[in-house]
Length: 196
Image 1: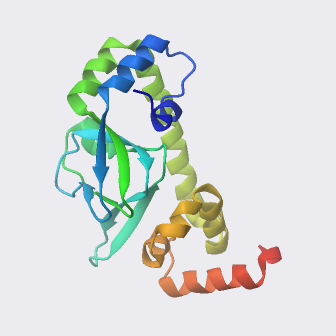
Image 2 (image 1 turned 60 degrees about the vertical axis):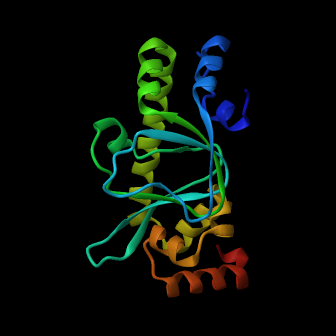
């Protein structure tokens, strides 16, 4: 069983072919439909997924009960709620499919078994976690240092599928702007592309 998504996700220079084969074989294919929940708030994450095709997002409710998108997951990314999975606590986030999604699932117990058996998987995990930490840190700083237009353009550049398939309201909440502001930003970009 080979999958481009698995190969991209576990692209780490120190894996031996037989280690990768064992890791790949431990995953099982799962399909979700648009609107399906991958994880619901209050439940503990017992697996992570590698997204082969489709688009998903995580969100929380703010103090007024409004949905706020915290992350968009695109192809070849790991869909995970790290805190819930590794601290074994109920999730504060919901993860839901924006489109139909094809994923590869690895359950918590199997991951733990492989993690202790394959030292290179531990190294891969550390490398993946540090990249994620860097990305989250960068995003939190950019929320204060970049204009809303620049943040939108960055999202368009890095995850164009989000702009293509996610509803305006979800993108606006992710960028920390109102729907009206986002509509204005989009109109400005279309009418003055050179200015941005």
